[in-house]
Image (tube, rainbow, N blue to C red):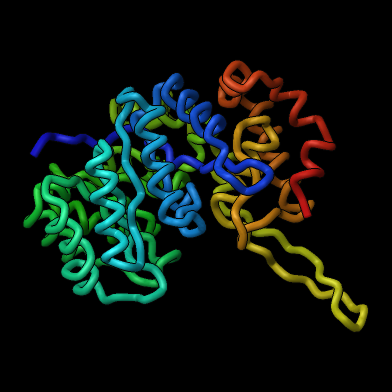
Length: 351
């Protein structure tokens, strides 16, 4: 089996949509070209950020095919093919592998909640056995799936299959990650699945993460890539500077906003709304003039307060370090400052 290295920044691509809800293929190609021009290490179509749960499987496979076509072999490509149905995951993984994806990302099965043993034997091993020669990246994110393959089962899987040599860790559990390093060995790769934990995961010698599968790199690929390279090169001064420049953006992967509801009797009640990925990043991208469009239902829009939070993050990031968002201007023909200051742009993105 050929070597495949996971390091640096890999972008979990959004899937852009047209106003009628169809996929914006021109925008998708523009986004991929932007990522590659900015030096990203890899791209991931149809992960969580790509709204995989609300794409039908024909669309799902079409996005992977188009990503491979638009990429033209210029950077590495990891295809999201996970499902809560093993048969569906096998079908999707075989398609991606035969189409030319470098590897597939399999998220732990959501909603039906298999045990760790069942995840390993009835899901991951089933895909690996059905598609010889495939590289599989387990994606551990219990906050989304309600289940979690244990570190022990990850280690067993990696010991049995050469195609399993990296995990995407989105548990937020640094103790678990250190255990992964201890059980899986120094050659096993750990990729951060949380932008705001990337520095901790890469700097901690007990974890030794090699990079991040990033949401924020949709808007700042060069900066996130440079951050990971500085960390790999142990350039702490430059890494710290970039971490500070990106710090405001870290707050928009998920946004919690307290909003008022008008009740049937005329009274008001306060409710905390949690706007989850990819809604905030697509809101930011649309606000800045990038190809994004709305999310697929049941995701919708943010409230005015939520949109204003995203807008303020863009303003603070641009004021603190214009180089972070500046590459967007040339790629999409916009002025970042003008877009940030245009009230009509942001008003249209809210309920």
